[in-house]
Length: 107
Length: 114
Image 1: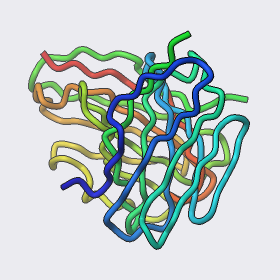
Image 2: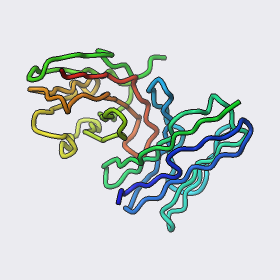
Image 3: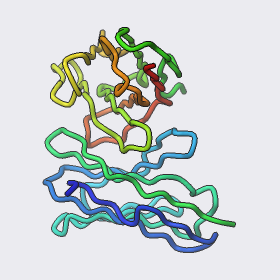
Image 4: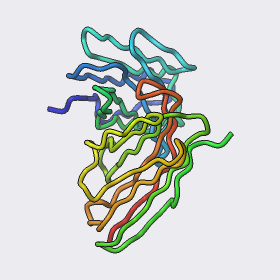
């Protein structure tokens, strides 16, 4: 079993829908990152969380340390949100990655 | 301002040759990271440099891989005697602080070993 599990693996949504991507981890962490990888391959850091909740535009990320779970929400989704979303955790100065969630938003 | 840059963007080499991949981090960033993403696979953490501290090399896939960071800035990842399984995109990132800080990624170097 992977130490970082993401669900779903693939997600197709209609423009405007509310999106949730989940990340569960089984190791102790000091921080959790949400990354976005566009079809061209470039990676952008969306959030770094150690507790609570962060919001940036239409994106919201939450983390529950006790339950070892984080969620990434996208409100009013748009086709430009189509990308792979990757959850990563810092476990003892070693980054562990989820397999990613491929999101496709259709117009 | 300039982001993280990597060179070359693409590298095709023959099995057995040595390759050097370069990363220029954002000026002022003390931490620098190397990752690998094989085709259709997830990200793999290779090594990171924090300030002047010696890096933890335990994430490097084999002793054919080495990395250095000169003067706390530019880093090179060297792969000796390349194998076909080394084919991947090698990504570099940097941050002000350590692994608990926002990372800025470079565009990657796509390595193909024939």
